[in-house]
Image (tube, rainbow, N blue to C red; front, side, top):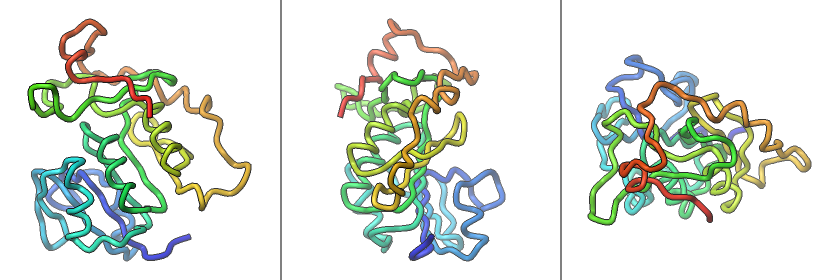
Length: 208
């Protein structure tokens, strides 16, 4: 069910609803209200605001835009610091359903995420077409479980979907092994090997 019919999409990447796919477009067409944030796009007519998106400020920016504490749907689609922004948001907000972009290159069981800022203060940007962006399905699953969210399904190769634990029926948890076909997918990104300095600089094992 729904409560406030409010969506938040962090990472929009289009100037209008119809320039490309959107996780919240159908909800908008069904009459929901919401907020769209992107680092490079703005369109006030559709409540799309240009904001720098980082874990340290994202919760404050959602508050500034009057996002309710428990929006019905939150989408995080950054091809970068997805896990860190996910964790930052759920420290202050309690969305009912959350989707987060995941990196399907990693196999099930590999708990890996890229870092947002390196030891020299550099910011990760997915501009080289590499396959180390974002976080693995396993890393996101661990983060969700530790913070009261249950992984229920995926859009294969693209998004994982969580439901807040208090909304999940008893004895309905999905076996993590069922997500194995949704991982280890080589999607054409430039492969960064284990010994590559780029991988060593920008990825870590995630162990909450």
